[in-house]
Length: 441
Image 1 (cartoon, rainbow, N blue to C red):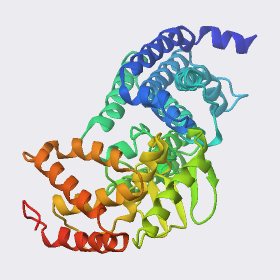
Image 2: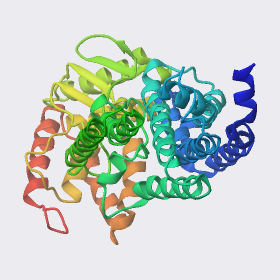
Image 3: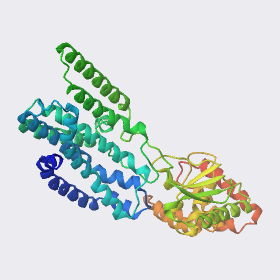
Image 4: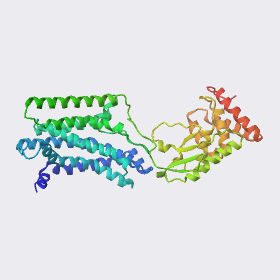
């Protein structure tokens, strides 16, 4: 009965409907964000949905937790309960008092996560839990901090000021473009996660330890040894340790950019064949065997035409790499397979990886002529011409370039087969020699 009464009289019970209503409004506004709608339309990846849903709620949950902690501490102080009840420890009293407020903060984090997963029709996974667990632990930390300050500052002052301060500081950390390191310790993970990405523990512990060390100091401050010197020594040591940990967190993340450490290539894959072994994320539900057939068809056509086209060991979908700048090598290719819905597009992507210029800078005409010839051999010329028609719009002479490359390839295709490969090799060399010139020689 006492437990029910504690919940019934807690300020968290009366504040919970307002807090959850605000969360619902924020969740509704997420549908105006193209980033969230793209997650709903794209391949299913639970960590991305969880990260996006939590992004708008971290600061609200922390502010509510710290404000409720301060308010409930003020109630204990006013009723002198903190100084009485010798049969129970102070930590138990604090835990029972803070539990309703912590549950409200947890609800503010769980509600948008559940709604986002349900809307996307995605089941939660173990990989999607770390950010949620981080937020729930920090709700406990902020509630503890608010409780400690509320014992010493009147609740009418401490509760609103602490709530506003946390709301501003955590929100500011994500929007400050001059200083990037605050966002890596504030508990507000704003970078989001692309498909196949996860946050490693190295990217989470600065958030946890920065506020957690301060919360641990506050919890130790509740202990009241009989001797005044022991009390002062305990609190001084705890304060110094908390400051040292917080400084270490700042120093650790100070050199990070806008995005902290990320783990990529974590999505389950569907693979087919060998040499090359073609892999596509399972969430795409693609015909992996058909994709491999088109890739091998394009490479075989080039090799039959006399082109030294490499046969990779593996071909991976760029979707699984997230935002990492994974570069293709001769042994391993990265192609946008999940976006290549047309077989000719798959063949064109394979052609673009097979055409190797002996330089880093090429001209406009010869380079495109060589690539168009290779695309024609592989049966991907229509897609290449459509793509180049868009790419050449940035040049004033785009029609002239298109006409020249078509004429050159038409003449080359009229040559005997053994001469066409020689023309292609010569065209690659001229593309490098004519770099920086307006016309081909």
